[in-house]
Image (cartoon, rainbow, N blue to C red):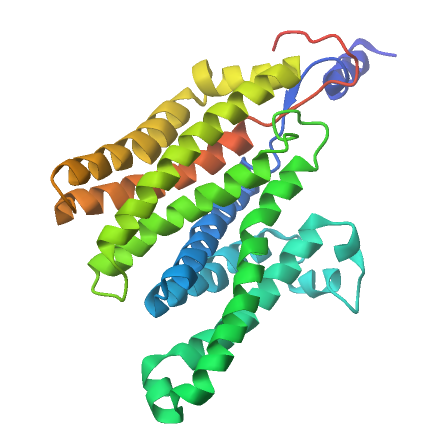
Length: 315
């Protein structure tokens, strides 16, 4: 074997002897996965929170985010986007074994069921047809759409959790962390709906956001500690976030903007005896949304494959 061929073989097979970053879902076209997954959390979280508080405008905004932002970006990422239906019954039974196929099913069902719920919950339509006809349909489809929104919000976590070769992702808490982070994002966005004059209580949304932020801090801390004990490769992922190339996004985007700024503004409003000033609330919403992008970026960027051979060598 020539020297050049030997060198090429060694480079090609580095993944066998040293940890390697996953790049498929965070670089080049993979950036679309990062953006789509972030809008997945934002849309699904907003829809679920709106369903709980009874905000039609929040439901509409969450549905629009999923159908007109998340889905087109995900479909555009496919090599042959218009064949996505082939992952669904009756063309395929992939949903029985693949979380990716289940995610497509959740998204399609959510789009259809959510649309029906929105139609029968629209105030003018209810006045025209009658509440006795619209309400049963609205609540029935609300339950069905809500279950599928939950599936849309959590399936990405299960897809990553299923990748056994990346120990940092292969943690049981990952789907829970992603889902609850999405709900926290939903509280931030429902606050924006209320500030825009929609049918949502800003004070109630701020209170819910305060508790979810605390829960997310505990979950992120627990997740990092648990991952650190799982393997040497996962420790490299944590090092990547805490002191490596992704540290700016982790500390600046996720910790500072995603957690500390919204929590600080919320606590300030609580001390003042109610609701923070509108400019501060807008700042909190913007910071919260940036934190949502930072969280998904950090999780995807820190994905490092475990080498086939047991001994870990430095990068």
